[in-house]
Image 1: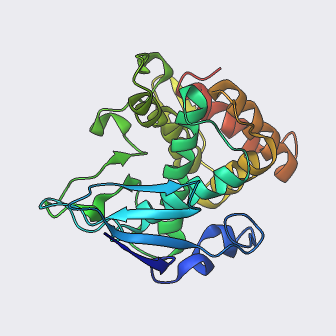
Image 2: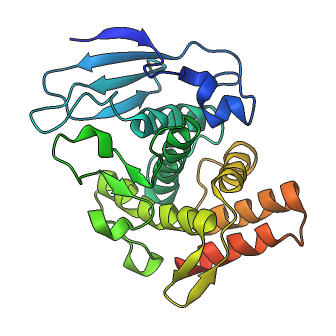
Length: 249
């Protein structure tokens, strides 16, 4: 069971970085209605973008979680899958799939930030009835069992685990790009959330392809920063530092 609603959070599309910053006209840039099914299933503890139905779907959670519409970053995560599905079309497997998941976490975080809510680098923290829980962390992926360096990547055959777990590597790079800091032996100069988002948005809409790897994503982000700020800009160096810090050559 479930029912349809238009984009299910206050502010809607107008308060996302896609509209506020990039002037994108819905996820497809052609004015598509943004529709969701909420209260899906019985104690369904998940949310997803359905390419076939062209809508987002949210469960009501179970005894330990609230409705999956309760977390703005989760809603932003799912609408980003729609944007990716309409642009780079990153395949949901291997490194392209992990990059797909990371983009959704990155822009879920930015949607929360541009909404003016209690912005942080956790994903899904508002879902849980018990405090101090979340689904993932961009600032410290290892807190929730995800790798923060390419050398720690999951290499098994479970594709669902592969894409969700290894997203932590790019998530950490994005966090370092925004906030700066030392990770292992590499010092990263941060450039702020806004510029970080601008670079990843341009890369996803202009340069990423269906099979983009982590290494190719690094090159695309470098090119995007060069487009936006100039080839010799400090932002370009920060991208190199951020990806180097997580072991992506």
